[in-house]
Length: 386
Image (cartoon, rainbow, N blue to C red; front, side, top):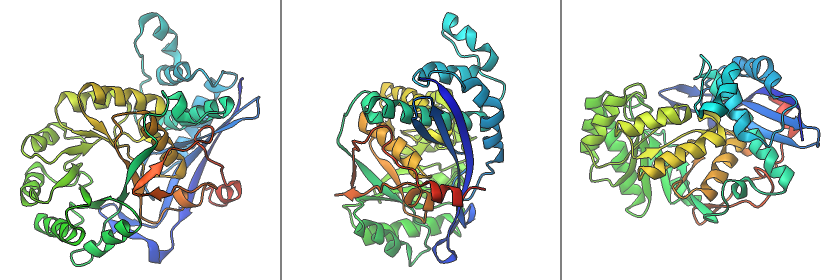
């Protein structure tokens, strides 16, 4: 089997004004991503997703051009089943020939950012291809079925005091047993964030899990004050309380509270996650397969987490392709204990493919279709291609 074509498309799906939300990132008026398709001489086409932002954020012209002009020439004619070899070749570039002899990586100068995002989309597509070629779901190739269903928490929660409880109660009514809400500088103060959390706990009661995400907007002291104010609310985790660039500050927050700390959605490759672990800065790792290096690299990140007694909750704020990749990883991997289920308006999750992800008693079931198990709605994809 040989790769004969690689296609990358910038997708932008607009969101109706009455279904948009506002956070510290601004008004979310659309969903953007890069769709990656890898085709072979056997007729199989693998689907992948490459990301440089969330929601309407991220300019994808650079990702598309990186895949088209830089990475595709390295892929044409290769056997797509050689996943590790392809990953190392794209990561190390012209020095990839040193890898077999030394056992070490020789990353290209631009080893972060757009390059890894593009590699991520290609890698996901290759896993999809391999599963389709073998007639097996990707989880089978990742080690087999460890679990047949995985809890999925509702990810949303932007409403202010007086409305946040009702907003998250709607998610519970849809079948979720855990919810995640946004806090941080989108609120008027730390006290305001704490009041919103208390409203949610009082509304939902003790039987529903609550996680909070500050999007990295607080200072260390603000994050510590918040943690003290909500210490009796039994939070599942406090996500990105401070900037992802402040690993020392993140470790300081973690050391001052028993609320688990989650982080990693913008980190790339196992090396960044190794540093988070070494700094004792995190309890829950959150690699995004479309950002961190694809499924190949997420498997390595999960191995690091397991070796240090940590859990993984992949960041899945993207399209159906990304969610499917996270689901396949979770089915096969013991330390992946929950999935993020977007509950903001997301056409790329709900309209891009024929299949739907349904909750059953708060869980998403393991799929049994080959590859990622997705059927692209090509007419829709073409209609939202920039």
